[in-house]
Image (cartoon, rainbow, N blue to C red; front, side, top):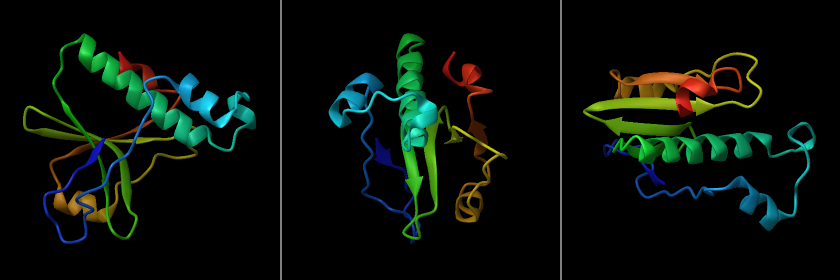
Length: 129
């Protein structure tokens, strides 16, 4: 997935993130099949799962949203962005969210019309269905 940038001075313009279509392949490559409660990579696994399932959903529904992530040089980040029909939707993925994630100030100032949502195990179904 490519980084999202509107050429703001502090945005990373040429970044990439790689996700697996199947977390089982990722787990096999790192030889880790432990339950989520015992893993130190539960957050990245959750992010990968949500993005791969959203991609599958979009393909099934023939939704042609453009998919990105967003990051600044100061390491402020939003896990996932979708651009569709002139709307920008931002998502943060949290496996164990004690509270909702907050929108980085640089993002909210640069993209005030974007919507933002935190996706957790409690509310993921609406995101992938």
